[in-house]
Amino acid sequence: MFRIKVERIVKKPINDVFEALSDHAGYGSFKAVGAAKLVTTGDEERNGVGALRVIQTGPVKFWERITAFERPTHMQYKIEKAKPIKMKHNKGVIDLKDLGDGTTHVTWVSEGRLMLPLPLIGRLFDRQMQKQGTVGFNSILKSIESR
Image (cartoon, rainbow, N blue to C red; front, side):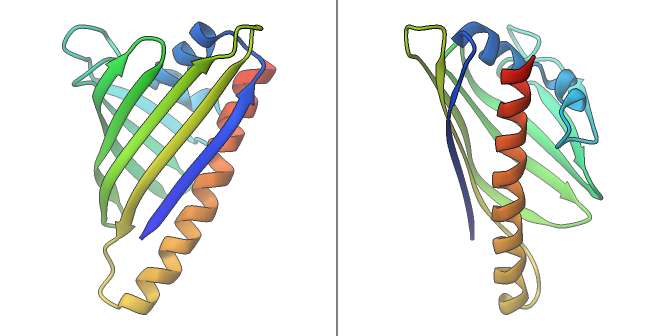
């Protein structure tokens, strides 16, 4: 099982951080992401609950569905499909807290496991996923801060 947890203070107002993290089509502008596309708009907001985005990072594509959307403090998602790997995604949560001085505390958690036929290899790939996910999430937050 992989568990990615990144906590970071971003020197940007909470609304700016939330907009950048919820603008699914804009993920392609982040260095950690190769391409991103909003496939289905949300039920009430374009990037809100029900929205489906496809994100490609390296050779891997993820189909992520937004399952909770509370502007500007909380968002949840679930990876419904991944290729060329198979994955069971249990949790994707982004929480933001306004620190009152133009900065935002971000907590980003993603948990799941890669579905590989050999358990030992699966654990190795889970560790790699955890490492790369941590680097990727930090890169995205750093990019938001530098805008």
